[in-house]
Amino acid sequence: MSPSNSAPAGSDVVLFDTPAPGVALLTLNRPDRMNAWNAELSARYFSLLEACAADDAIRAIVVTGAGRGFCAGADMDALQSIGGSSEGAPSAEAASGSHLQSFTTTVPKPV
Image 1 (tube, rainbow, N blue to C red):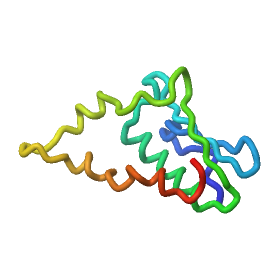
Image 2: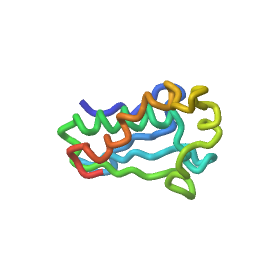
Image 3: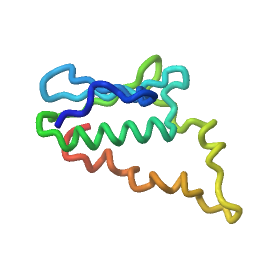
C-alpha cells in the first residue's frame, strides 16, 4: 500500500511524492513558519513515515523542507499553548508523542 498522494483537508503540512522508483519524498510544508514543528505536522509526518516504512516498493525516504529552511525546530507559539501541570510535569499533549521521538531512527529504510 502506497501512502496517499492526496492529503486530507488541512493535512498538507507534510507533502508526499515519489520522484523516482523506490524513493519517497516527504516535504515539511510550513514555509511561513520556517517549517516549525507542531502537533499537526508531527501527526502527518509520522503517519506518512509509518506508511512508507510498511510499503515494500519504497526503498528510501528523503525528508526536506519547503521554502528557505529545512525546519526551525519546535513552533514556539504551539509550545506556549501546551504548558505543563502545576507540578511542572509535562502535560498530556506534550507526553503523547514522546514515543515517536526515536521512530525516524528505527525505520528499516534509509531516511
